Length: 86
Image (cartoon, rainbow, N blue to C red; front, side, top):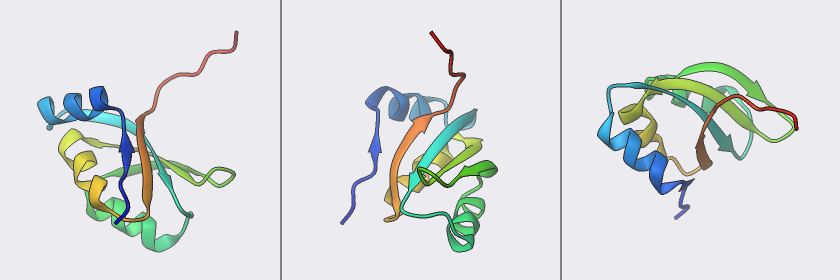
């Protein structure tokens, strides 16, 4: 059984605000059409996919994001946000 990594604060926020939209980065084993269909079926909107490090940038309700934690090919879920150069 694979365990999806997620920060405990993000998990708690998604549980407490399950109907609010979250922008997430979903790290996966590979980018492919069947993975995309699964994300869509769980209520996520795919904003983009990144192939160098196989990741989907998605948006969706917190409850939908939590439902992905049992998907075996999802390795990590983290919050998406702005990146700043130092």
